[in-house]
Length: 395
Ligand code: GLA
Image 1 (cartoon, rainbow, N blue to C red):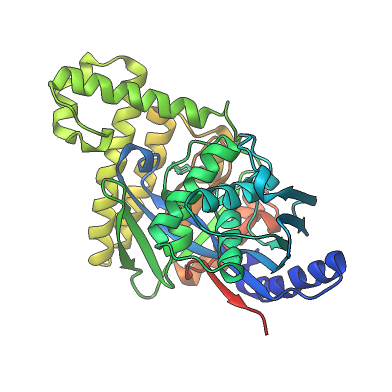
Image 2: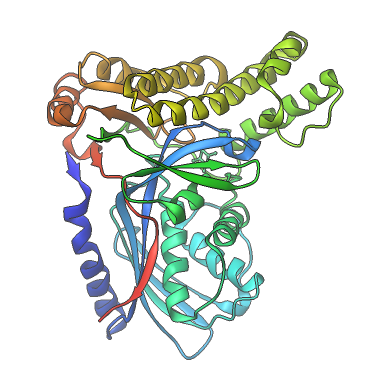
């Protein structure tokens, strides 16, 4: 199984070496951003709902230095290749290629009034790509942290998260919510982040001690991103569901999660099958996040686990964003006595399973998944809940 922190200590060095090799001089700043795991609150963020998430110790590192012109040159040790662009010729492109995310960060920061200049950057990463742990928000946040070291700007972390969400919408064509950049920027060691997208406020929820282990298990099925992905389709279905709720309730709720669950249930049978199922999932997820917060306060891990299992069943039956590979991993995980809870993590349709496991059982659990589910060692990630993104000068 993959343990994050050991590898991550070397990431800055390997990015700095790639920089030296490619640009022939030393990098002087570093941006560092974690991946994130969605604990509960599936597809609630863009519906104005609550989500429980955590930053995890898999990181994207970006090292760099200024250029004196308006050119940006980027090389990636892991993402294969290099890119360059002119700061005065950045145009939104809406295809999910890594270099567009980089352009997107420069683009949205400039549009927010930040005065930027040229840069040379090198990227390295230990965040598994396509696994549903937001390698894209880790990338955009690490780029932003590196830029901030080179060209200091004043933006709150919330404003920065909103800008990075915009970068993803406009430059990658993925109409994601705030969850990913927000968690990557607000993560805290040993604590879950409870984000309420009704007003984008958040609180931290400490993990009960001894903290359970967070294990990610890659399904091997890559999620499709980009403009035509099912993700954007679901957003449309949720909008239809909101319109139907407002019509039948005679209200003007601004977002689906503002509809009280009890009111929705009163009129649910008058809504068409597909939007009704999507709304049921989203509203029940929203309620489960607060139930999970309460369970954590009472240190009732069993209750947290039940909520995770319920969430996965709802994904299977109501939101229809699971897939046979994820379901199979969950069934096999449930055979192990150390499992507290599990569900698909993030958008769905592939990516990874999240398992919350009793800390003293984690090695045995991973061995079970390897033996019974034939999961490759490198597809299992035992994660620590860690701090959010940061930047610094390299000495
Ligand atoms: C993806 C998106 C998030 C969120 C989740 C589903 O990870 O980027 O904004 O919508 O899916 O909860």
